[in-house]
Length: 237
Image 1 (cartoon, rainbow, N blue to C red):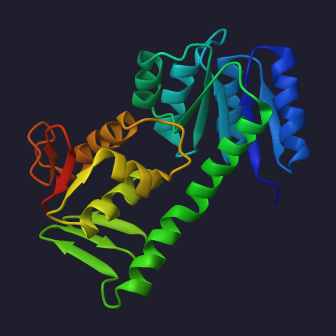
Image 2 (cartoon, helix red, strand yellow; image 1 turned 90 degrees about the horizontal axis):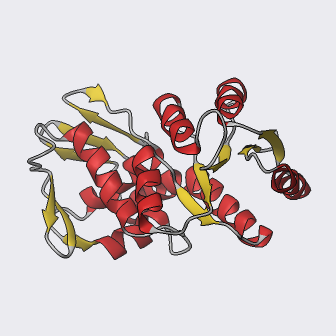
């Protein structure tokens, strides 16, 4: 079955060009011209990836992104006409996975799409397989009431399954496997998101905050994922 990609873009010429290019690459592309239709289409079709413009009529892209994130873990590539850091941070806070600033080349967009799909499909499996192959007998990581089952690709807190997004799980695994080691944001970004990721280290901070909300007793005063000021993070278990 072809990978399904939803394009939510209100510029007809650009939307048509995106649909054409994605179809040429073998993807099944859907288009929506405003935020409301885009959200309805996402709910109905459950696409494998969403290309989402920020500036949309009826419902802007940030609102659509936030609504999608409440219901599904579909990777989201946001398009914006503004390149400033505020837009990027706000988009990440809402749950976007990557950013592309207009104008962009179709080749770059296709590369970002391919990278996002590859990470979603292979990163979790790859991390688990790497742990099992390189460290026999460590299919489970146990930290008091927190357990990470690498063979199943899941984590549990006090026996209850944690509903983690793919990148939250990958981040938790990487931190846990390096317990007690100070890890820089750049290193985390490279190992968890990949060297070809287009976003900045703010991505790491956002995902750490999300993870803390799920595994820390007091997220505002974390004891498991500790901030090392000016450097990055250290996992205490």
